Amino acid sequence: MHVEPFRIAVPEAVLVDLRERLARTRFPDEMPGSGWTHGTNLAYLRELVAYWRDRYDWRAAEERLNAFPQFRAQVGGLGIHFMHVRGVGPRPLPLVVAHGWPGSVAEFAQILGPLTDPAAHGGDPADAFDVVVPSLPGYGFSERPRERGWGPERIARAWAEIMAGLGYARFGAQGGDWGAAVATWLARHFPDRVAGIHLNYIPGSYVPHVPAGEEPTAEEKAYLSAQDRWRVEKGAYGHIQATRPQTLGFGLNDSPVGPAAWIVEKFREWSECGGEIERRFTKDALLANVTLYWVTQTIASSSRLYAEGRARPLALDPGERIPVPLGVARFAKEEPMPPRSWVERGYNVARWTEFPSGGHFAAMEEPATLAEDVRDFFRPLRGLAP
Image (cartoon, rainbow, N blue to C red; front, side, top):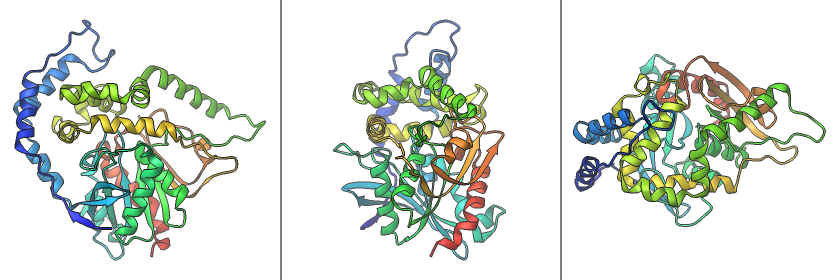
């Protein structure tokens, strides 16, 4: 695998165009008193857009990301961007960390230090990892797929190729959202190479095999009902991205306020912020992620992953189980989240930890907690790594 150093450097003309488009925004009206019940709140978005246009500093965000070693490599016919931060310790364990939608590699800026250099963050140097954080195909600075089939399963094969190309015969995997699906497919196809997987989300398409004549437990039935309600009440974004991502993409790729509204709503709704989004995320943190989608023009290509995932869901065959050890970090606001018994029907659950706070964006909401749980889970598995 040929690896080249990479540095984020968005052309100034792109940023000038962004500010000009923000200045020309044509905001829609809003039903009085609707707040966030119909989607992104108009008053908050006006405030965020004004900050984005007049005060936000993308160059500072670039500098923070470029502080981590960045690379690009040809993998599976695509140019894949990834960060690769080597651990500081006696024997760092290789770990691939996979993001999802509407996230990006920027999500993990706060946990890379605790994972790669635990001693500098009050931990044990023996818990250090060599961390690889790729951008999903069609996200960020990775190329957009030009053919169908780039779902979580194929991405997992690409991540396995990256890890092999970097010289890692065995490694761990961590993920939430689509990253949880990619990590699961890694474990499914490469159990001899994957020491364990740590998830803070269980893939939405995961369906274990339930033997004929066996009823799900009352707790499992309650979860399945809650999952159905969630899809009806809150899952419209996923349905349109799985069925009509191209139509959606025209609007979101033309006005920067489109992806801002589309993404920020999810950060508010899926996080444990009590309805106050900036209780968990600063404007700078939100806009670093949104701007990354805008300057790379990947809001449309990122949405297509839902169509690809729908075409190849994570449904297990009769008697099939994901064989490698699984650690689950269950953050309070993550929903819908299956009970442990449902997960154990298809995964080899070795650790299950419930946390009283935090939500879907755990690496940003509770970075210290997530990093510590990852270190704790992999500690007994390190003997499996070469």
